[in-house]
Length: 108
Image (cartoon, rainbow, N blue to C red):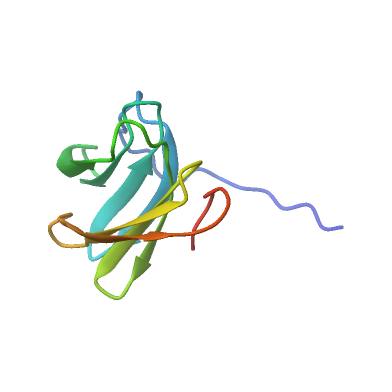
């Protein structure tokens, strides 16, 4: 089995209180879904300074999980609730929800 090595090429500031569950780069911005009891959200972050420029809270009863991009929408999963939230990628305005069976984890 080959052994690979890595090297750090850059470091960027990030909200140390965020429990990152999903992360993606789209249209020059970093999108992140966070999971924490009562504090989950979906956010757009400026990479260079870590500033949160847009945020939408997820229902406090839900634990946010994975994040993916489909066309012009972000899709975020919930861990135990079987709910996939859809968000407009530009505004983060909610565009709908879908139900699924089982737990939500990662999404690509």
